[in-house]
Image (cartoon, rainbow, N blue to C red; front, side):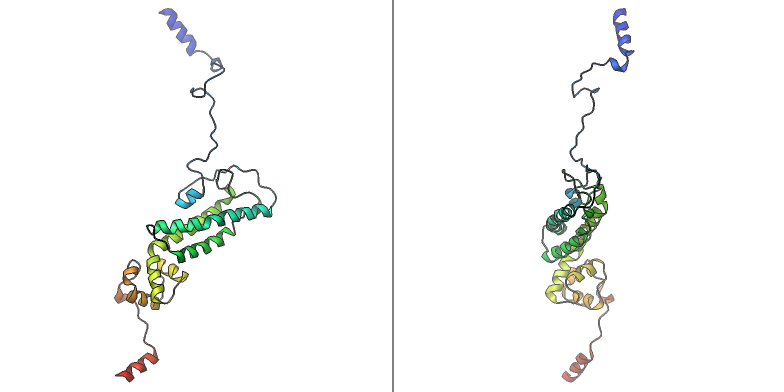
Length: 228
């Protein structure tokens, strides 16, 4: 018994270097293994699509001299992703229902932002594992803002603006999506939407009694008097 206690004390007092020189990978004392694959927090096209918070952890060589081919490749990469990202964002916001006109609006907005994402050709916008470069922070956030804005338009304005186009109300097209989602439609457009698209626009329209009505034109007044 005394011999066993003595051996345990000696083991406990052994210096750290006395551990076996070769340990299996699964042992607690083994050197840590590096996993270079993207973590769940890495900023990628998937996190951009989902609107998730993320970390810019791309592994890229130091920035070099401007290279036109690198800049073109950065822009093309994001342009190629634009239609899928726009279509998915709008379809998701509308429970699977498409809106081709709003997709076109999204793509135009996306293209404007992507034109500023070339990083002057000094580094790739993403690394080999698809992780956004730390130098692409502003680009990533601008792209995310476009998708969030378009998702809002799809949620609150798509059905209303589709009806507006069919009913030939004032302020159609891209202006309708922006104005309706921000509740900034003009009196003429509001009156038309209230009369012809109340069901589709009910989320964004004020009570009918509070909507200003345009005054009848001089010609319509004269025509009305003649008809009496």
